[in-house]
Length: 189
Image (tube, rainbow, N blue to C red; front, top):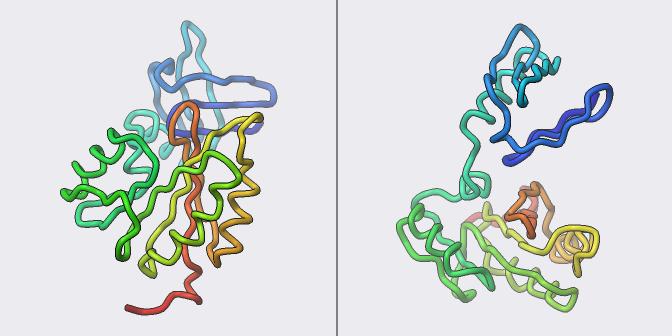
């Protein structure tokens, strides 16, 4: 059995096959090494190990918000390039400072929309504005027909001297991939 939990869905393959929204799970509890829940009238037991079952039960009961998954915290300096104003407004509520919409200065986090291969040059420009422990998030369309494949994004990171460290489902249509400056290459400020 293989099981995957993200912020929106639980997917299981093997003897049990599931692809279900977290909101459809009922009566979630940990019993020994198993995560137990109900879907409609059916009880499901997933043997995950006690520690994983407890973590998954917590994650299902209180899923992280998008900004929590992206690591946004109060006091951070953030830049948002090419994304909706509503996203920038949500960041401002957490950081208590509106994010900039242009690359001026250095940032703890930069969010850059990439909608086509020609946009990948933005990665190198953004890298120049990252604080040593900062994160560059590239937000791009997801799915088989996406105009920019995730491998191209990772190649652009590598070319800019960055390493990818995390992928987050940004929305139903977009994914976000995080890259950072490798620890050995960070210049202290």
